[in-house]
Image (cartoon, rainbow, N blue to C red; front, side):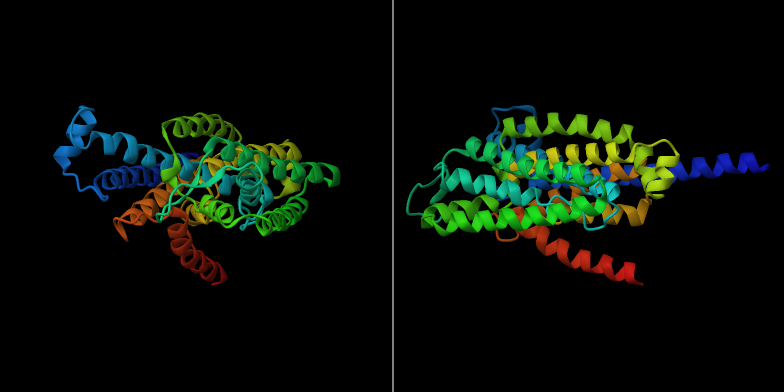
Length: 352
């Protein structure tokens, strides 16, 4: 076999192995979807589920179509967004800790939500029961959270543009915005009533159960163009892995790629956080795991990070629904409990 033939064979084997990993993740996600539809406070048989999926008037159809399927789709879409966001931010900033949380995006959304609840009166006390605290104007809260997140991103990008679009400037600007938004949240809570403080804390609990069908469609419509853009520039992100000068030598406009990557990933992150609240660790963990399994080729790293992010979030939400059934925990609590030990494990493996 000639050297050329061997190279072609090795490359085909390389592509095939990456594809197998992607197929395995898709199969695992499908299994997780089936399990998530079945489990819950209302125990439905396989026959009930199939009948409800076919006939919307069947027993259990209301639970499946109005509660479980929107929740599952929200977890999948949000998990995909988080996996992609973490992958792109870590790539363009060349920092393994880059994520919407460490860049101040989630804190900006939390400040916007706190402003809507406390200043604009979007939080209320509905009764004297355990679930008395509600968000009586959810779309106002969503809009304010989105504006808060994008406001923080805009400041970071403006500072980066003024000082030069480097990873160091963006990370430092993100840290500054994080502390600024946290100070703003504490300031608002200091002058708020007990109900408003409780409503603010309630909103920050990341929960895919908040999403309705309209929310799911909005997140889906925004995810697709972002995924297409990132896949189109996969080779540019590959070149950034070799360093700034190498990428520029290959004709990549590194400042534009970094700026656009941060802007689009921050936009999708702001949408997810605005609808679902703060869900930690998924955007950090999913890209880290896939880099160790699949490498730094972004043609495969981006889609597999998205699928793994969806799988992690969906499994975490399923656990949150059954671990203390009939009590349903916010999924953000589960992802933090699962994510922190796994992140420590990855750090120790990197040290070795």
